[in-house]
Image (tube, rainbow, N blue to C red):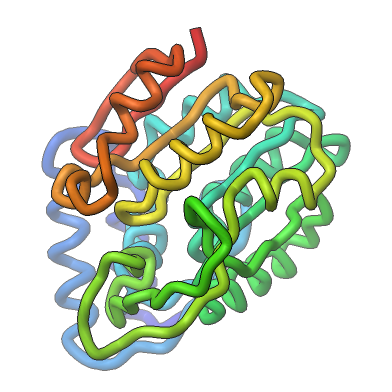
Length: 261
């Protein structure tokens, strides 16, 4: 790690969870990225991750891991237990998967589903860095039926890749209904889910909730809501979950934590 980054992280990683802390940290990150930077392997909370400072998610985890989705992380710490089963749908480079892995322990299981092969390679690298054995990686897309879809790539924010994204950058991805993936993993219950698939949440969950036995309904879901894509997706995933019996515990600009009543 170069001296400039070391000095910046010594400051930003001490910021408390107060309004404006993330803004200041992001300004420092932007200054650091005034020129090309190498990937860095650093401590993130209580594990290691290989991070690309130029990527949106990576940069946040590099400069202020204590602020990154801290309410969602606290919820996982409070509600995932030894032996639980957790699905990370849209796993990106594995932050949620690693947090959940520590919580569910060796008797538990984490299924990390990621459509982008590039992200998936980095996800596996981060798992290997931590000698984790309870995360099963699935490199596939999730949709409302088995099909091949074009995944639009966001070069600077590959966590924002979407099947709804249009543009010159994209790859073809084989997709499956979520229940097919669950059945292939031979699990008979799901304790928690993080669902972040850039607008496809409604299509995936409408098919899953229609086909899955109630025993396979997760007891909580951390879901990203993208209202701008609701019309294209066919509906609101939050309304769908509420009609199914979930209630909202907390919401931010993006994520909502919902529990099964």
